[in-house]
Image 1 (spheres, helix red, strand yellow):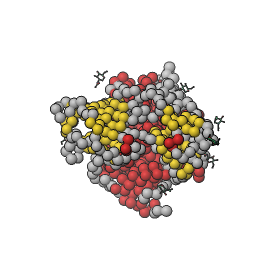
Image 2: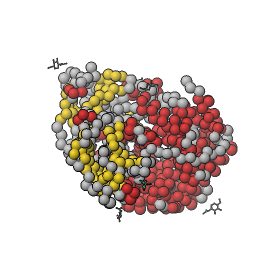
Image 3: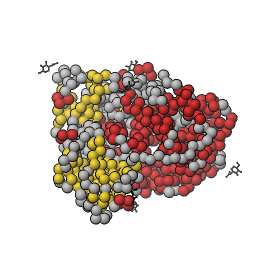
Image 4: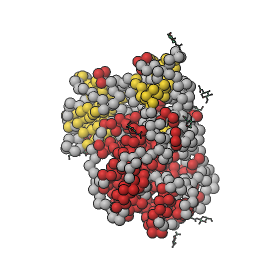
Length: 632
Ligand SMILES: *[C@@H]1O[C@H](CO)[C@@H](O)[C@H](O)[C@H]1NC(C)=O
Ligand SMILES: *[C@@H]1O[C@H](CO)[C@@H](O)[C@H](O)[C@H]1NC(C)=O
Ligand SMILES: *[C@@H]1O[C@H](CO)[C@@H](O)[C@H](O)[C@H]1NC(C)=O
Ligand SMILES: *[C@@H]1O[C@H](CO)[C@@H](O)[C@H](O)[C@H]1NC(C)=O
Ligand SMILES: *[C@@H]1O[C@H](CO)[C@@H](O)[C@H](O)[C@H]1NC(C)=O
Ligand SMILES: *[C@@H]1O[C@H](CO)[C@@H](O)[C@H](O)[C@H]1NC(C)=O
Ligand SMILES: *[C@@H]1O[C@H](CO)[C@@H](O)[C@H](O)[C@H]1NC(C)=O
Ligand SMILES: *[C@@H]1O[C@H](CO)[C@@H](O)[C@H](O)[C@H]1NC(C)=O
Ligand SMILES: *[C@@H]1O[C@H](CO)[C@@H](O)[C@H](O)[C@H]1NC(C)=O
């Protein structure tokens, strides 16, 4: 076991002074949401999910979203029906959905010019301003009384007030920086002043151990991304109080263990612990301290190697952690004992995408882009019931004889429009408004612009303003294995390096690239970026990229004879109630001819000679399925 105490010392050395701001150089930069638009294609789970989510945001009435805020300020709620589930007036974390609603609205405006959504969000901010004024508590704003913070001080049980507070700070910050609403910025500033006064009071009044018990113990172990937010504010404003506050929300024991690369995750509540890791990453981005970079890098690698299913998802506790601790990380490399109807909480995967995105920015390493795709296509796609908006999953079942409608989480199966509002709803409405994010990245370090294509999603990359070019990507991936890029330039010729990801799963000798109908002699090496051999581009230049996929079996990390079956990056679910033994040779699984209008399908013959179909997990809605199969 490593010496955690030694590390705690390292972490606390800097408590007295803010470190100077020393921004790091990223290898790659993501595009702004307004530069990338999802476009129609014969099959696009990203666009379908975005539209379904847009319909959900549309149907939520503003007054119902505001109910608990009004109540908190004694504004009349007569005639308004409260929301249910985690937003009900009896829930400690009421009001947090509205905070995410602001984040999602700001992104909906940027990503697909949803002015209707923006108008709703403006109204919400104005009403929140009213509430903040009536509360008249030095900037405090929440749907619950500040008494929740006093409860923390008395170490009384209360559910996640810091987490809620941070989400609203983030919602107002997004409304301010992304949509230019200055009122939201002022309100956020006032909320931060209140928070500073409260933290300052606590640190002066209580012992360090009391503060740690308030924030990091079971009283309130979910304090969200508060350090991430505060370090970001420090980077933006240089106000040392934000750096100081960020440090007060660092759990030295957890972050210290990670910086030493110790797997400290077993039994920890997964979703509470990803945002503080992002906080560590943000601190590194602002100050350049290498131990904070290590925290995020090590966390990713421990989760990915030792706690992750074939879907790219993690968490589902069992083994020493206990059967009912499904939101917790299980023992390292004991995943085969955790497969049932309650795996991988949606929010955890949402937050892991943020972790992986940071690593893509820092390193430009294609391994991270592979990982991003794995999570995205298996753990984000497939979490909404497409038949109606607002029916989303909490956890994703990965066992045998499981189904999404019988999954267990905040409730049973898909949630409902007005009575769920689980954490997986809050993060989902944000995720589905930014589906165009991380498809493309750029770098400009050598003076020549370079674009990196990370994912295969039908979309327009509008880079006219800086580089005089628009790149359209058209594909029905993964129902088809080709994707076609067409360029339009606003000047005669544009100098541009185009790098396209060659995924880890590609079958190299059956894959190819054509530029303007000419087959290129380029070796497509899995897990690299291929640089196209043309550097001057004109309107109507066209690139066709075919990525051959094959079926392959991926063993779970603690049992080489228990496998998940994938087609390219896509995890398949077998439409069978039994985890029947399959032959080891995946060539014995037959592909069934399908058109682009229907899901890809396969037929397997088990060792007992019975047959069953396999479908992409993300295409399965109500059927019973099995994910992992023994091979004999
Ligand atoms: C709302 O009413 C309650 C009960 O009368 C009172 O305790 C509280 O201070 C009031 N809050 C505000 C913001 O006026
Ligand atoms: C955004 O929507 C508004 C209102 O529908 C419209 O006037 C405007 O042209 C749109 N902007 C873009 C960039 O599409
Ligand atoms: C807000 O509280 C201060 C005292 O803390 C008081 O002087 C002021 O009148 C209050 N404002 C309103 C609008 O109630
Ligand atoms: C985590 O996975 C790596 C790679 O498979 C392995 O070397 C290591 O022993 C595992 N750690 C634990 C604690 O099982
Ligand atoms: C989880 O662990 C318990 C106790 O060891 C065991 O009875 C149960 O079958 C396990 N659950 C799954 C889904 O494997
Ligand atoms: C890249 O750098 C060039 C030269 O400094 C500049 O003109 C261009 O706007 C930059 N592009 C981006 C996307 O930052
Ligand atoms: C599958 O689950 C259903 C409903 O939960 C149950 O009735 C059935 O017996 C199970 N089948 C197997 C093979 O376990
Ligand atoms: C499966 O079918 C093969 C070929 O018909 C036969 O040889 C074998 O005995 C069958 N196995 C079982 C378990 O029925
Ligand atoms: C799934 O089942 C629910 C409940 O029966 C139904 O409302 C919904 O339409 C079904 N979804 C699909 C895609 O069949």
